[in-house]
Image (cartoon, rainbow, N blue to C red; front, side, top):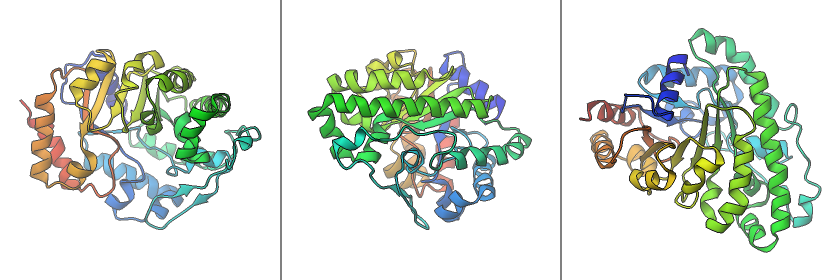
Length: 344
């Protein structure tokens, strides 16, 4: 993003902005390749195509702040690959990572990744290094370190059902696994910051946080996300969880979060009451059923309805409840932007 966009984003998050019509979207490989008319595999395997696609989005929608901006990623395979997960690739669909933990005993021998050279991580960093001159030439900067969260990574390494059973059946082993993964996250975001000193924010994505109750949230979420967000000095600590978000919302401030992207089925007012006035919110139009599947006039109406129903427009970035999904057409995004602009 540009320095102007960063400063505007920071002003909203800190409650200093008089602009109540900020628009921002999380974009990555589920949406960008199809929207740009390229294959997912081309998007992942060509640095030039990756750069051109991201720049096209930013140039076509100058009134939108795309987050985190120039996200160098390989879908859900990114972090698991550093632990040795086998990546399975498709021409026009998202890749997936195979499990590496088949029994609880495998956690004991799970390697602690070297973030400078393991898995797909060096390819992510090198892409940014190679493309950074062109990114800067266009007036943009790399502003966010990005990682999936500890619970999310754990489920890719051993399976969602298996991990949730581990929380219930063997807390000590669960803490051992989350401790290893959190150490990896700390080292990974620090390495990103070392490589790109322009980084001033952190985005952590973890939908599995929405699968646990309050007691488990206190035990397995709060301490590990707090450690993760404390890994670098960040002006914006951005947390994405578009699964059930009512359990974690009261703990956001304690975890260090000051920007929260949440599920569309939670009204903005409800999340505001739970999270408190100091946490900025980004959301929360239904991404699939409205932003992707609706007609432009339906997107426009639903966006204005969302804005009317929000009791307080302070510290809000208007968006959808999650990242932009596959098959969101240009006209629908423009309808969203126009609805925010036109709102009285």
